[in-house]
Length: 330
Image (cartoon, rainbow, N blue to C red):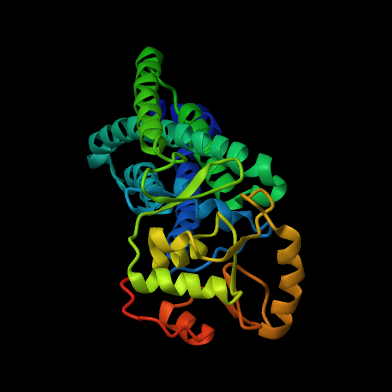
């Protein structure tokens, strides 16, 4: 190794020497974060969250893209960033100098483009979390996994920008503008339909009219009659507009039957909210069930049932005697 090369390496800023391992490490942390969210969503589990807001945010329409949990795409992005950062480090030896140099040059631009896109996308999601969840609900609207991912994205961008000496700043700026515009336009197009009511469907919305879920499933005569029977016998489903399990329960009944379904809105910012009634019922339900009160919770003939219930079970529990050829199921 020549003395000049040794001298250049010795005088290189520490951030330049360690930028790739740092980027790779942060990308791995981001991958673990999104992998956990991916697993919980694909297995219908609930995320552990100190504020309780994580599930509310992660169950919203903003946490889904192309029919898959958004965390899946985040996981792929972080894995890609880790590969871009660490792959050139695996190339060693004097005979592979040219290969390593080429890999470093190409992957630096890939790292910059990727971190720019992730930063803009995360920034948009942070603005959604603040305006749609934190402002209406306070600290309970904070998704800590989302905040962590945004911090990771910002860190990747800063380390990529400062982690090497960029020879052509003009090209870098031009690349950032192009990637940023494409990301922003794509993001706005992806989320444009969210929050808008769908004609002919049952739109599950907050008190301010923001649509969280849309039920398009049709109702059979059995679903309609069961919903009417539940209403007539005083049964109640305690739910929240942002609750994904409540949405799945409503899908079983279908659009037409939901007009008669006797559900009680427990979210403070929900439409026709009955928070006080829900709080009174919660203590009774917890005592009877021996578990924390959650959504949905059914109250039928003086008994409480926690979680989503198949229509056949609701029919049996309520003493329903009508037709039972239910067309919808979990």
